[in-house]
Length: 233
Image (cartoon, rainbow, N blue to C red):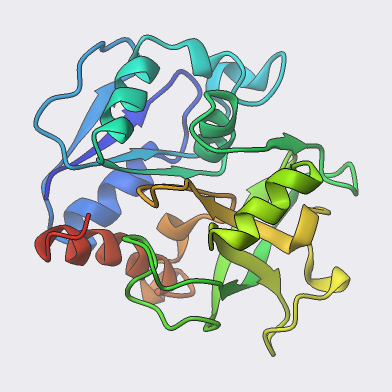
């Protein structure tokens, strides 16, 4: 499996994602500059965190129009695996690859801390290496991670098992106190209906080695690799 890490002006987690794929998973990976208009020879794409275009106007709103994004959309339509992390999630929402929108954190403050997550489904290329309802730990770092959608969309996310991760406490309870940003239903990550696109606010690349505080993040990328090898991705 060959990964591509899309780099936008202002991306700052691109090198971290590259390192995890290259040094932890030992899988082929290349950077893809946002001005490229074709995606060839890749099996999985990572839209990393950061502040694309300085987060001016609205997070992800300008990056959504980068030349590469039409190719990202076409890649996803063909069944390619796409993961958007933090700012990458925001870009996927703005581009319409995932439903909903991001609002300012309800605290109106930037939040940067480790959080507990509940794995809501193991039925995807990104979560197949976990048990359903397993509690894992990953860090967050965002000011606009308050996921919002209307009632109809939220019910569809539930009905079609599209919620990948929720914020929870260490016992797996999805309490208001465990929600760091006010996201509807404690949502931390969602899938598209076809289950080949994942957007998540926590940063798996930052918890991919024990020396950094945890290894749960590496399991998400490893799940993608395993799924591809088994012909499921």
